[in-house]
Image 1: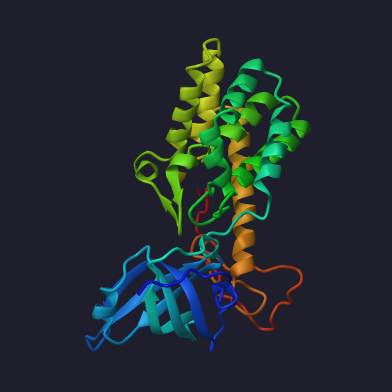
Image 2: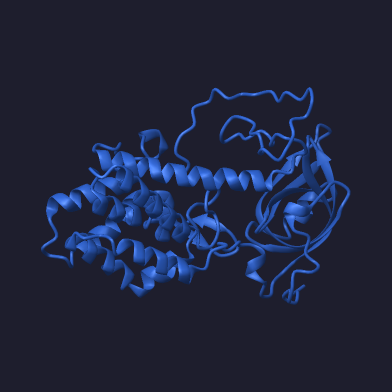
Length: 344
């Protein structure tokens, strides 16, 4: 049955607000679904539902196989259900749902940056005007004058899951890394400021091809098969083709900044940083990603008390902040010894 698009969000229950015992209704995107069997051999369906505030697991216990055949991953469901708690996590039991075939309000599913894209672009352009090297300045201008690139660059997320994973996230992250580089270069004046700023601008530009964004953030075929480090290098090479006097050594260093900014092979870098500016860019990028990602983890944590739920990504619990008091006698089972690196 075709549903009328939602004109507002008043009847939508945001996932971040769901609590045990709540009756839940609204439009949610299907991120994943899978059939399973109980110990008695009965089929059940597990569905991952999402809106822009997070995702929640939902269960269908009756006629699971028939229900599963009625929708697919990527569909939008208009659901009603009840929230329960299982192993300290909110879980929905669906009572009814309909597949939405008409237009939907995409702002339900993809969160926008809190910053204005127009203002962020203006700040970024002003900051990059500090670049004095005429070759690097000309390269940066090639990107800013490319209307199609800028359309994607202003809209793209910076990642699928961990950090800046919202519309405009790539622009926000790029601006932030450039601002970090600006301060680092002030503190360490022997660094090549121009090269670092150009590298900070270019380091993630390949994400305009690595990621797609519609009802959800997903990897493109190019993203899975090539990746944004290589794609970013190819985008730079394409622009360099029109700059005949661009020094080869400078181009080589800039491309190395892009290819090495994840730091280690196991974190997706085809090359490890091999000169000082490359190390600095890697560290600035990693810092901004983790500060943003951990901040979002704290905001969305639904666990009561002073400690977050256990983070599998970081292999530890986190103390939420100074405004929370430690629960007397509470001692989470810490597992802090896992190696944690770049999260892109």
